Length: 190
Image 1: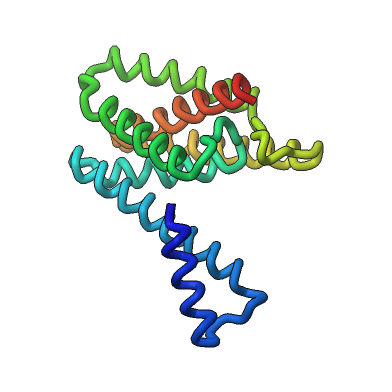
Image 2: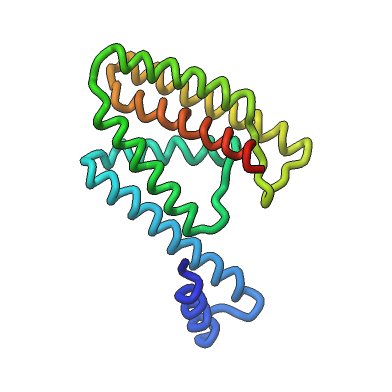
């Protein structure tokens, strides 16, 4: 998405002898990743701002990314599709949280769905991608790390429930539901 701009900046750094030929590709890649990260963060803030749910958007992303890294799942074929897919997912999650009626019936439906999602995460993770194959040792390590992050998030969810931070509890439940969907899709489209 930002490859031409990253290339021009890296060229300029190379022409000014700030980087040498050996570091050119690393620098170009790093600049491209920096632009992508800025776009991702700006998208989270924009969607959160539109729904008046910036905090929820940040919490969703901050709790989704660590567990997603180790659990794996479906990956889009291009960075642009990944960005679009992530933005749509955040949009849907924030809509669900914002427009779900605040009553015990819906709360318990989300709780049951999140428990099912946790079982799916526990059972399926890690789901490797065709571009990132895992050997036996990596599979064991990634599964363990997924479980540790899941334990931490469940513990956080219990504390937040006891503190009556129900909207944040829903955010965590949506993290697990979203991840379980990504794992199922990853298994299906392997």
